[in-house]
Length: 533
Image (tube, rainbow, N blue to C red; front, side, top):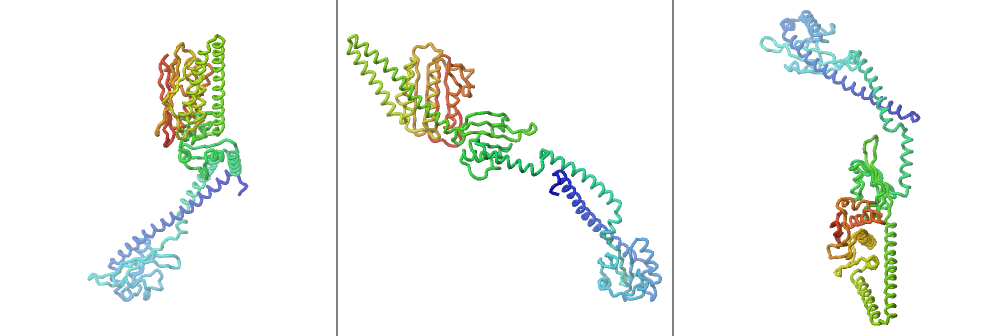
């Protein structure tokens, strides 16, 4: 049996179920037929007994000493007409006046179940005989004065199961034949359908494939999560559990119960694939590819394959911060060299007083900016970034002004200095790019960081060329750039991602040749899932 193909195993099993069901059904049907036969025999026996009890020949005969000669003849005629097995007539002394066994006629009966009948009771009883079970009806015989003068007992044999089957042999043969034929056909169709659903594979082959698939999912270095159309988890490999710090068995659970800010159900809803998108899930920077799962062009779920880029992103952000410091030093060195050349020239021209004043002014400006950033911005990476952008602006002929009311004591929930370096760096660089095609002479960028116990607001505003209204809907799309030299299309995309990570909101105000302002507001204590502005 174990060596048989799955198709034949299913056929044999389903065919056995059909035969078993046929046997059970047949037993129930035959039992019902037997019960129905018994009910009909009760009615027939009682009717026959009443008929016999009312016959005048019977009433007269049982009062005569040898009246059984007449009574037995009448009883036999009634028995034949009513198709009854036997009729027994007795007088009050229990002498039999009719009986199926002639030798017992004229002899007294000693049956115990007859006693109530001699007390004018009407009833039924069952009696086991040599040839089967009989249903018997008892009726008292009364004269014209309603005095009891005898008893009539009418018996009919209840057909056995064997007799019922014999009587229905033709019908049963046809039913069994048709059932077996259609059962065989149905079993073969069911087996073929199941085999097709199993991709024509045997159970051991499916077992091996499942083991190989499970081992593969758990051994790869990428996280894999799959869900069905009802958002139930079907796959959650070990790498995914490690990335999101999930333990235990999660298959069968709702994905939103395991990862509250998951982006996988969006794929089930939209039925569109997303490739190599960097998103933030449960505080992790994830490079994710999410694809709908289809079977025969029918959507049945979605799968996500992803890598944890949190450490890589932090390293890149740190390098960005180092680059900002290097850029600040380069610009500062360039600026100081220019001032030193100017001072040297003034000294050679004999204008020592002006050279000394220029030295004092440069020193004071540098000291004021450094002191301001040191006092108000309590993070060296952010202070260094702002210092570098101020110097960078001077080199480009752009005035970068930091609001004197600005302050940054601590970062909002979910964010750190890496996020703020990326956020401010990209916004300010985007503002620099706004002057590429601008011919304004008073080019200016205003920067403000305001913080209270409830919110932290960042403002970067320029008076450059502005943003065309037609491209506003695409502003945060990955890879989109407004054709500015050196643009990568990732700056504002990353700004959007960081805003969503911190649960913040972005507000953009722009006008043609009037400039652009970006205002980003973060709650200091983020609640619930992150949201976009």
